[in-house]
Length: 361
Image: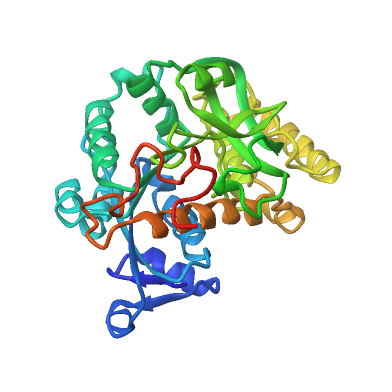
């Protein structure tokens, strides 16, 4: 069902432009269709702020539940933003106080720029406040990447571990709990992009009493859930990524090398570029290094030679997981959004995992 454009956020028009179904609020209010209100705590830096909106909005909007989706983006104090980022948040985003007052059915928490110590990040305490509120007042919270690492640290006392080198690329994963409601209709093997410098290992998820649903021998755990099966959902990968996302990230890293912000030319993200891509990019690297030695402007990144041959081998599976997540939220959410579970549903086992079936079956 459609997203409802409940503000003049530019991402709604961008989604329309690429074929997404977005309807005006006035039209939605005249339709007798159930509403679901989903928050997006967007902690990404300015350059990725709007792209992150579109990526998560698209995943939600493409789920096929019988509901109209109202998205409620908000951010946190303490996040460093430039003038454009601040203006975007001030104009289009809600405050956390407004979100608390109006209530949500579900919440998505994006990743953020990593720091050496999560607890030293300026948004650490505000993030804890949001997660604690959501745990008591929202049916389900989906945490992405750094948000997953933060919640594992402050709620489950499992601190992320640094990797020897950045893990980025597209990796094959296997479903390890096929009977879980979030895995219904999902391929037993599928790809997921990753991009991170740290990880939470399977042993840490187990020590925290969390259930791992999807993992990779190369990339580690992608998807896990809290013991009740739904209240907290954890992604380490990025199923919301577009097919160009890792290429754009690689381009940004090369830009950092050209600006001498990093000393080593970035390696290729794994399982992303074809042999032809790699040949083109190797030639481009030679050109970059020559211009840096000469002190002349670097050549333009050959994006136009790469885009047409990039694959997206993860979107359908990511959409299926989000579809199941939205369906579970729809099934369990009380008409009063401030009460996260319907009467008669055990909050400790909302999906009926310990009773042999999903609640309401």
